[in-house]
Every structure is written in C-alpha cells, then in structure tokens.
Length: 541
Image (cartoon, rainbow, N blue to C red; front, side, top):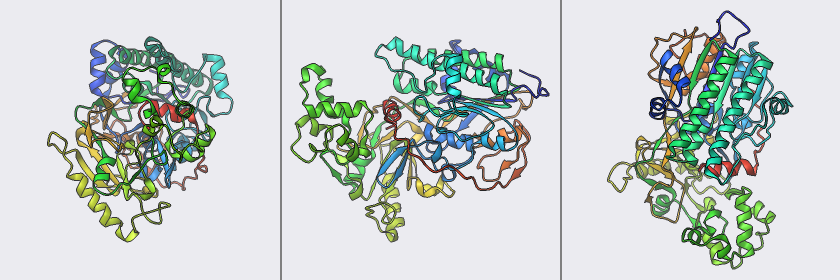
C-alpha cells in the first residue's frame, strides 16, 4: 500500500462485498478461492458488521453511504410506495447526503463504481457509475464517462447478461465482475481520487440465482478476489476498508405467508380477475411443472400476451396501465380462460384491506390508514389500537414446530427515526434468527417450505487495514451506520451530526458539525421494465 504522505495516492479504498459474511468467507478461505480478501482480513482488524432492519440491499447500502437510518434517508426497500402504486427506488429517493458528496464539499475527489441506488448521480468532484436499480447504459457522472469506460475497458453491463447455459451464466458473472474492477481502475487513473468505493453485487446474486452451487459461488468470489488484487496493485490505496450490507445464510425454518394469516384474522380482503396483486408467472406454472412444454400447452392469445407482459417486466401495481399495452385491458372483466384465471386467482385487495404486507423485503406490515392511503380503511383515531392489536397477534404466531415465528414484532419507531418515518411500514416483523422467512402470498397455506433456500441475515463483515488505521482495535459492535462517519474521520472532514453511527475505533473520532439541510433532486420514476425484471429474477419483487 502507498505512503500515506503521498497526496497523489488513493487514501482510502472501500470495497463493498454484497452479502459478505464470515460463514461464507471462511469456507472460501479454506478452499484458497479468496486469498486477497483473506490477507486483508488477517493483516488488519476485522469483525461482524451489523446491518439494519430490514437487511436488504435496496435500503442497507443507502444507510451505509449516508450514515443514516431509513427514517432519515427515506429508502426502506427496493420499492417506494405512493398510495397503492409503487416504483423501484433510485438515487432521487435517497433524501440524505451520500458521503462522496460530503467529501466533495470539502475539496476531496471520489470514484464510485457499482454502488446500489446511486442512479441518477448528482454532480460532485469525481466519477460515478451506478449499480443495482440503475438501468442498463445508465446516466453516469460526469456525462459521457461510460462511453469512455467502454472504449478503454470493453463492454460494461450493470447486470450480467442472461443465458440459458449454466456454465455461460458463471462466465457472465465473471465477466461482469472483471469489468467492475477494470472500470474502477481506469477511473482512478483518470481522476486520481482520494476516496474510492468499489462494490461487487454478484457475491449476493449468486446465492439467489444459483443457491448451493459451490462452483458458481467459488467462481464469483475468485473473480472478485482477482479484481481486488489488481485494484490494490494498480491504485495503491493507503488504507482499505472491506464492508458488506448484510450477510447470507440458509433458510432452515419455514416460510410464513403473512397476508394469508392477515386474511384469516380479518385484516386482508382479496379479489380475483387480475385487479389486485396477480402473479403472472402462475398462468402456466402447474401445467409446465407437470411436464407439458410450451408447445404442448396450446396457449390462447390472452395467455401469450400475459407471457409477453411477464417477459417485458410488467409487474403487478401497474396493471391498469400496462394491460392496455399488451392488449389485455378489454379481456379483464370478461370471461377469461381457466389458465388466465389461475394466473391471478386471488390477490390482496389493497384498497379494501385493513393491513397487509406490500413487499417481503420491507419485513413489515402496512396499515391502510384513512387520510394517508387513497382508500384508507382505518380512521386515524383507531391507528394505535389497530397497530397494537396486529403486533399482539403477530407476536403470538408460532411455526409448525411450535417455535416463535418472530424474534421481534415492533412499531416502526423502534427501528427508525427521522423526517421520513411515515414512508416506512407501520410494523416491523423480524424472523427468529432469520432462519424463517416471510412472503406476501395469499391463497395458500400459512406456512410452507421456503421457496428461497438462501436469504439475507443481519450480520455482515467489516475489515480495516492500512497505515492510518489502528489494526489492533476491536471492531465488535460495528454497524453499517458507522462506515460513513469513519470515512469522514479519516479525511478530517467534520461528521454530520445527523449521522446515526459512530467512528469505528480503528481511527480517532472526528469532530461533528451541523450541515445545511440536504437539497435532493426531485423524485423521478425509475419506471424501467428491465430493472423490475432483474429484481423479480432475484426474488425481490
């Protein structure tokens, strides 16, 4: 690593390993698949990094790069809700100052590559290529830089390009990871930043797309490790901080269909016919699972149109607008073929329900509150009583094994505080040890086998090594909110007094300051079918 007195060196490299955690890393270290990561962890100091609730990418990375909880930055999930409609979150939904913008205000430049929820980027001193929730060929900062990256490094994709061949999908992961590192190094050479932030998403993706595939997991981490080694050699950072947004682990317990429970308790109303929360993929699921091929199935024009809807990323809250674009609007409400009915046989009727789960990744229940939701069913005077009743009922839920389903069922104020608390779910439901999982399904048994054998856990990993870090310091008790204050302290930039974390003990705590209110850009819709389709493929939607 470089001399900390050399102002031309990269002073701090933050490496984001999505879903990185000791339980995964230790087996990779034993197999010799990640020697650079192993060296970084062994050479300095390391420990667990506690995520937030909910420990999901779409909300956790904004918490990490702002140092603030979702109640302050406003992002609770991959989705943002407006009444009963929704959109995939993007950088305009983040209502708090990213750390690289704070550094820029103090004359420090940054290169940021692949960090989720950073599209579209705002102007700052440096360069940014956004990560997950950005569209392909995203707007970058400065304008035109992505074209320069492609000329210098080869084709660049936000998401691995899909293919039917299993071995090719691994190659797609590797190629995507390689381009991340190459792009970051190119931008470092071009912009000579003091701060760099390079994130790798495939370390999470591989567990969702190829659960339990040892070869794929090792290939992903080996590619990440190779790019990390190349980056350290080329960019010569004085200090390296490895962080993750959450951990990952097997779901050994049960899947709990919360909306089905709420229906049986009298809180959820349902409807059929494609006007509630349909799952388009179920149109031919049963027949295909029983062995029929697409050609054998003899689908009607309506069914074929529904396939098109699924393939282009049409998802459930935009039904009214998007059915028309694929010729389905007139069919809904008339007699529909049986398979089409099975496609949307029963859905949550959000406007007519009292409370419901909108997104499993929120880990929460929303109350249909009068005056807040367009067709609110619960008067404001009954809000606290309704919420307390729901908390009591959910807290008492036991799995078929007779164990508590949740380790905590709490009002949102237990986990969030700030000006945007109202944007979050009203109640948080935290599965016991994250060995159980919740989903938003309705129309099936309350409990079942988990559809996803791997899911997120709350404990990730942090490791710090370098000339400016006290490598003997203990990192026990570190949280994702501590990363942004630590970055500020290392650069002698006053820490925003509104940040929720503390400086990690690897460096002396910095001074605090009260900054002017952040003036974010107006919220703009993501409204990108490819982004929605990608999140659906990963099981988030």
